Length: 186
Image (cartoon, rainbow, N blue to C red; front, side, top):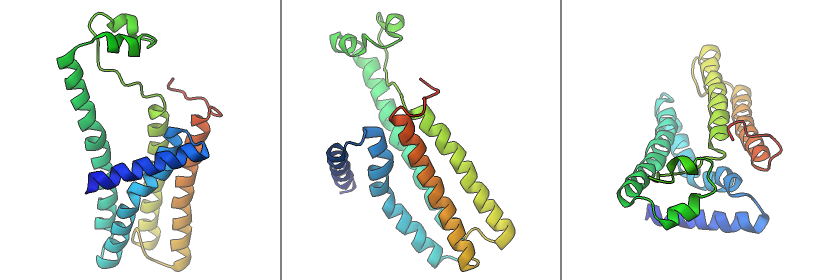
């Protein structure tokens, strides 16, 4: 069921992105990411309400992201690398990668290739903004005595800070995806 829902969300998001003219990477970090992250958001919210500490909520967020990164990316990558090693390179490989910058280096043996393009920029941007987000949580612990809770004003300020970090990520990534900011990793 989860795989079917994920495929449906991805297809609907892809159609919407095509309809409004979003590039695939921008569509992925906005529409697809929101669709797949909302269940985690609600689980974290319920965890905050049910538990005395914020440990489970923060554990849910970091655990979910680690599964996405380590299994969601690592497992298919490993499977593809094993497949390419077992199958070797053929005419399809040569046709696909003849314009690749390292083609001459690997044309005799072939190799599993996946050009990252926007990955380096998005990971760097995400890492920087994550440090800022965790700094906010540490600052809240020092000032309020907890990562969540405290005064209504403090909660709204924190919520606005986190929303601004997400918005900043989307804007900076989109500017880079549409070539308004150069990608330092290409």
